[in-house]
Length: 244
Image 1 (tube, rainbow, N blue to C red):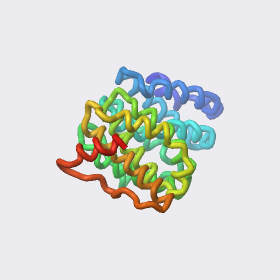
Image 2: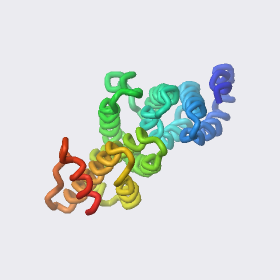
Image 3: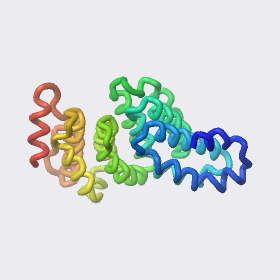
Image 4: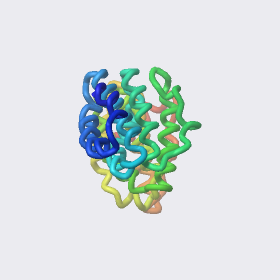
């Protein structure tokens, strides 16, 4: 994959068009590989493909970006700093395929480990707001993809996925949330009750709270507090919420 990334610039336009889709699928298959060096190479190849497809094969490659967008948003929290950097670069290369431009002010190198993920949460919120306006169907597809990352072996990715689940629902219309089948997503979030990382458990509970609030709003019932309790009382809140 590293060799392919280096040689893409030497291929003809027709070869890039012919190879971009199968190579993208090949790269996607290794986004979750247990070896950080393999993940680094996979994200590197995907970003290189995006750069090569910018001009004449934009529409074709946009489909691959859509199916990979959850991984690209979440693996900037990858435990491997090299994989996180490669994902970050691929994320920037792929954003224009979704009509997401001008992200420079919302996205910077402080997103990368080991810095706190608060900037990352803000970026995900910014992107989901943009997608809700430009491409609301994309939020629906991200729900399914995000659920898969809730089972990640890496706490940082699980934490980011739980946060993204709440952000996605928060940016949907209440009536639309009511129509979605969120059962699988809710089951995955509730399965994080007792997660080895308290931060993951809290983020999952907050996502469940957001969903409950949206669903109650659609039914014109009193909603939950939009902000989960902070500080020492948060873990008690988590226990109560997961028992509902």
